Image 1: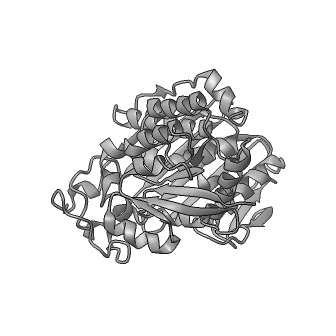
Image 2 (image 1 turned 90 degrees about the vertical axis):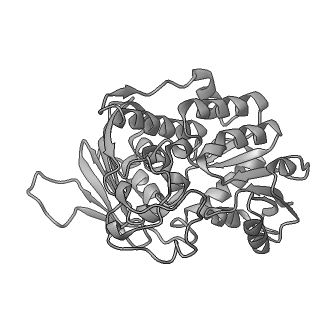
Image 3 (image 1 turned 30 degrees about the horizontal axis):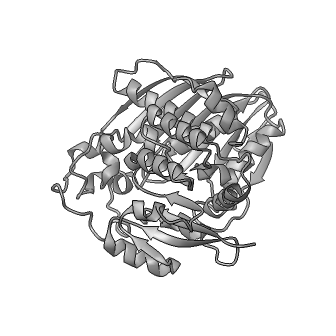
Length: 389
C-alpha cells in the first residue's frame, strides 16, 4: 500500500495531531507544511522531514502530489481554507469547530457536496475511550432510554489557553460556548441520539476581564505553557482583546425530546469533564476520562444517596494525545481519504454542535432569550449521511 501524501496548514499546538498521521511506510506521510510564521515552520519541519515548506497555503494547494490537507489554523480561518482546499480537489481534515457561524458551516458543506471532495471534521472526542465506553453502555440498554444529559466542564487552564491569545476575541471565535464547547455539545448529541433544536443560556466575563493585559502586538510569554499562575486572579499578560465569557451555562432541547445542560468555567482549580446521563432505568456518570478512570452506573433503587454503584466500568488504556483519540481519529481520516464511506465523526454533527453553541451564545448575550437552531438543508444532510457518495 502506497503512503498517502498529506499537507498541513497550521503548525501550532495541534501539530501533534498531524504528527499522529505521519506514518511513513504505514499508510501516510506528511510531505508538505505551511505556516505563516517562518520560525515555527522551520522548527516543525524537523519533526516531519517534509519535502516542501511554504508560508503561503496557496502554494501548498497548487501541488498535485498531495492527497489530503490537514487544516489546524485559528477558527476564523476555517471557512476560507476549507472551501479553498475543497475547490482545489484536496480531501480535507478540518480541526473543530468547523466554523464560527452556522452560515459558515453550511457554506463549507455545500462546497464539499458541489465539488465532490471529501470533508472530515476533527471531533476527536468521539474516539476517546471514556466517550466510546459511555456510548456502548447506553447502546446496551444498561440505563434504559436516555432522557437527560448534564455536563460540567471545569477548565483550570482556561486563563492560559483561552484568555492569552486570539481565543479571547469574539471576532475570531464567536465565543467559548462555541469554540471550547463544540466537542462536548457533539458528545451530548452522540450519547443522546439527537440534535439540539432550541437553546437558552447565561454567561459573563466574571473574572479575567479585570486582570492585566498585554499591549496590542505583544506576543505571549515564552513560558506560557510551562508556568501557570494560581490563584486565577494572579494571572497576567492576558490578551489585549477580551470579550468572550469565562463562565457560561446553557440548556438544550433535542429533536428526540431529550433535555440537556452544559456548564463551563475557566477559573476552576482542576481540569475535568463530568458527564451524567439519566435514562428510564438508571444513571451513568464518568469519574475522570483517562485510562483506569471509571464510568459508574446506578440502575437499582429507589434509594437514598449511596457512594457505591451497581456496575463500574474501567476506562480502557490508550496511547497518544487526547486520551488516545488523536491516533484513532487520524486512522479513521486516512481510511476515509482512501475509501470514503460513513465515519464516526460526521460533518453534519460538527455543523449541529456549532449551531447549538452559536445560538446559545446569541442567547446569553441577549438576556437568556431562547433561540431555535436553524435547520440544515435536508439535501445536504442526506448527502453526508450517505457517506458523501
